[in-house]
Length: 350
Image 1 (cartoon, rainbow, N blue to C red):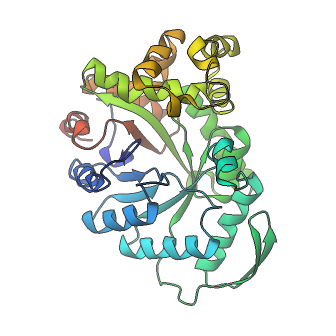
Image 2 (cartoon, rainbow, N blue to C red):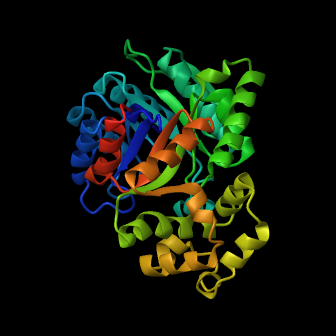
C-alpha cells in the first residue's frame, strides 16, 4: 500500500505549447473525474491566458481546485490581479489558488520589464491581501507608484490562497514568511523536497506563523504506464531544458546535492555550448533535448521523476509526500493519460 490519496495530487492542463486551448477543458474534467484534487494552469503569453482558462475551468468543473502555477506580478496591474483573483474565487466557489513566480531574466529583458525581485514578490502579496480586505492602499516601491488603490466592491468570500514558485532558499523562505504556500520546481529529489520544506517551515516559524499552515506543493515529472517514447517526451525533453538553464539548473543541483562538476559536464555538450545564451527548450528539437540526457549521470532522472508501472509511480509519489510535501503537482502526461495511476490508487483506497 502506497498510501497516496488522490486528493493530494494535482495535474497540469495544456502543458507546454497549446495549439488548442479548448482541449484543456476536457483535460480538467478528466482530472476531476479521476478524483485528483487540483488542476494547474501554467500561463503562457500566447494561447494560455490565466484569466480566460481559469474562468472556463471554473464552470467546467465543480470540485477540483483551480490553481495558477504560475503568473507574474509585473504584467498585470495590482488592481487587475486583485479583481481577477476575487472574481475567479467567486466563480469557482472558493476553489482558486493564485501562484506567482519570477521566471527567467531573458524573458523580462525581451519584454522590456524588470525581473521580479524578492521585494516585489513580497509587496504584491501584501497589496492583494489589503485590497481583498477592503483597505485603500497607497504604495511607492518596486512594483510602481500607486497613490490610491481600492476595490469598489469586495466580495464576501475567503480570498484565494497566494502561492509562490521557488527554487532557492531565499525565495522559499519568502514563501514561508508571506505566502500561503510554495510551489517547488520539477526535478527535485525527495531529499531536495525535504530540504525545501524544512526551509519553508522554519521561515514561517521565525515569522510567527504556524508552520503547518504553509503548504508545500512539490512538482514531479510523472509518466505512468506509457511507452518509452512518451516517457522521453514527458520527462527527458523537459529535464534537459530545465538543467541547461543557468541559475535554475544550478539551484536544482544544489538542493539535490548533485555534483557541480557533473552539471558542468552536462552543459559542456557541443549542442548546448553552441546555443550561447539562447534557452535550449526554445531552440532545440525534442529529439535533440532527449539526446542531451545521455550526458547526465544515469542516477539523476530516476532519482527525481516518477515513471514505470502505476505501482512504481505511486511508490515514488509516496516518497515525496513522506519527505514533507503536502500536495504533489504532476507534470508530464495529462488528462486521461493519468488514468492508470488514478485507477491504481483508487483500488488501494487512495
